[in-house]
Image (cartoon, rainbow, N blue to C red):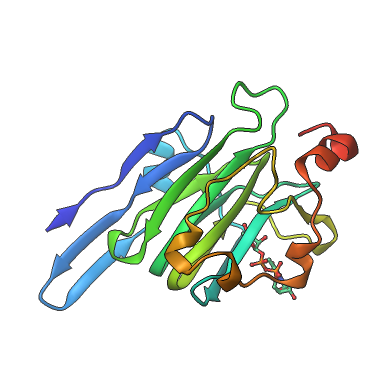
Length: 191
Ligand SMILES: Cc1cn([C@H]2C[C@H](O)[C@@H](COP(=O)(O)OP(=O)(O)O[C@H]3O[C@@H](C)C(=O)[C@@H](O)[C@H]3O)O2)c(=O)[nH]c1=O
C-alpha cells in the first residue's frame, strides 16, 4: 500500500499533523518523512538545521520544553514505539494562547507533527520509543527552558494510567525543577 504525504492543519496556528509518504511491501516499508520540495508545495517552509533522536523507556516524560531565544521549530516523529505528545501554545497574541493539543505518535503509523516556534513541547512514553527531531533552528543549551509537565494552569491530561500511574513516571532532575506557567508569564510575559 502507498500512502502519500498529507498535511492536516490544527487549531494551533503552525502546528501541523503530517502523514508522510509510506510504501509497504513484502520486505517491510519505505518512509519519507521530510521533503523540502513537498513541504514548500504545501506552504510549509522548514529548512533543516539539525536532526537528533531520543530513546526512552516506558514511563519517561520529557516536558514541556522550549528555547527562550531562537525558538526551534521541529518536526517530531516517533520512529519506533508509541508516545503521547503534547504541544502548548505560548504565543501571547495567539488566539490559542495557553491551549495544548495532544497526539498519539506511533511508530507503525509513521505520523509526525510540526511544532512551530513559540510553543512548548513534550511527551509521555507509552512504550519504549525512539523519537526523531528535524529542526529548522539550532539547539542552544544556554536558552534551554521549560514549564513543569504537571503545571496546574496548562493542566495536560497525560494518560499516565497507561504506564501504571504517577509512581512509574521517570523524569530527569532538570525537568522536576522547571518553572510553572505562572512563573513563565512573570518571567517572559509569553512569546
Ligand atoms: C537537544 C540537545 C541536547 N544536548 C545534550 C544536553 C544533555 O546533556 C543531553 C540531553 O539533552 P536534554 O536533557 O535537553 O534532552 P531532552 O530533555 O530530551 O530535550 C528535548 O526534549 C524534547 C521534549 C524537545 O522538544 C527537544 O527540543 C529537547 O528539548 O544532550 C546537546 O548536546 N545538543 C542538543 O541539541
